[in-house]
Amino acid sequence: MNSALNFWTWKGTVGRAQYVLTGLAMVLLKFNLDRVIARAFFQKKWSLANYLVPGVSGNIANIGGDANFYAVMVLTALPFIAIGVMMTLRRLRAAAFPSWMVALFFIPVINLIFFAVLSVLPSQGLDQNDSGESGEPPAPEKPWLNLDSIVPHSQLGSAFAGLICTVVLGTIATFISVNVLGDYGWGLFIGLPFCLGLCSTLIYGYHEERTFGSCMLVSLLAVAVPGAALLIFAFEGAICLLMAAPLAIPLSLFGGIIGHHLQKGYHDARPQTSRMISGIFLALPGFMGAEHLSATPPPLLSVSSSVEIDAPPQRVWKHVVEFSELPLPDEWLFKLGLAYPKRAEIQGRGVGAIRRCVFSTGPFVEPITVWDEPRLLKFSVTENPAPMQEWTFYDEIHPPHLHNFLKSDGGQFALMELPNGRTRLEGTTWYRHSMWPANYWQMWSDFIIHRIHLRVLNHVKNLAEAQNPGGTTP
Image (tube, rainbow, N blue to C red):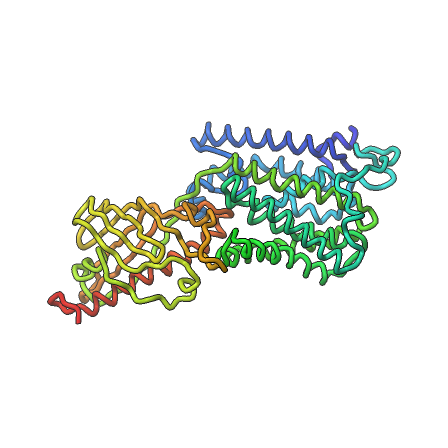
């Protein structure tokens, strides 16, 4: 059998056309197979978003409850993974890329961008044509984007050109994701930083090979400069940029590492660099659009926090239902502008009463759904204030993530009587956020909500412990 048509070998090479057609066919076949299995045997919905986050329809911690389902998904994926790895190895060989880059096949989002890059680059070598068979070398192709007259030869000039490219790519991609599609997703937080680091170092090393250290500096500036531009031109505030930095910086440096390695083989074949950059500019917005079309409702998450109070439940209860003004916070995250609770008010008593927990950015409106005095107070949330007041050079800004991207669905206070007239008070919040990767942003949101809980619980603790048995507070 012609090796170019054999999916089950890693030997030889494969051309662009067969690589693209095989990849698209495998994706369509795998997606429809998974969808049929999920619906027919497990009564579950399955979308493209599930390939980015296992268990995206619920808390990641609950995957254990669907062990059989995910075991079947993994088993059906194995032959597709094998074909994908072998085809990618052959395509890497054809494009004169190192074989270790097959590891990119397993990194969400980045693998799709790398697929696009391998799909546009022609095969290299005198004994390969673009179909992967022996023959005459392919005729030279004109690059889609000719950078010869645009990128300066000097080290400083080429670095500046790389940074200009990242500002353009970052602005376009951010505008498409946030303002056109209304998404804060994988393409924005994973794909974009990697592409910024990769493109900046490819342009920086366009005319000649640069040192590893200088490439790392350029790739670091590739996220710092667009981030500063977003801050200066009032597209984003400092808090969100700082929270995204632990994701963006390593990914940009990783892109820079790939770019530094690629320049060794491509600074003498500059049209290929142009094709790679062109492919990235097309692939990233394309992925963002596909991500938007396959969007899945965000999972319901929960955070619980507790304190022990030296007072009986009946005395604690009244301070849970409503509490007086809290002192100004001294925690650093609240001083930066994150919303913090100030007081709680209630209209009425029992189920149907309306509780308002007033935050620094506005009130949560909380209709009471369970009133089990003095054991459980449970409520839904019908109105959410902004989660933060962004730090900015301007009077105020209103980036989209301040509106409906972090929403509380409800909460409760549970009081458990302990020996010696003491009480364990536990607060729980159920919430959703529409920012991806969900597990990364959940670390931030869980941490912030826990700090909010403790601010309220400790205030209730202080009020209840300071109250005299007769009911007055000294």
